Length: 104
Image 1 (cartoon, rainbow, N blue to C red):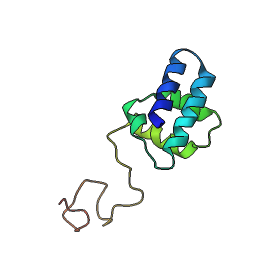
Image 2: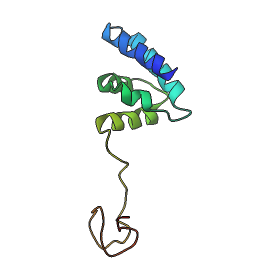
Image 3: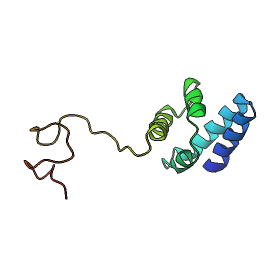
């Protein structure tokens, strides 16, 4: 159902019916949120529609932010916060000083 509502939102937005597009997008988010199913939003990226929807009232603000981040940079992984595990180097992919940082 998520894909159907997302495609409806895209179609209605293309036709210039912003209200109907926002309602359909909200329903797509309703269906996606319980499972965190973001696949359809990545297969059919619509950053402008997502941005506009984020400015309106939505009950899915956190999910919408996650989708926007993934659409903006689909190859990225969540960025770690805080210092690297060993604290002896900058945020490099690997180091030789601790097992946590060594590549496998």
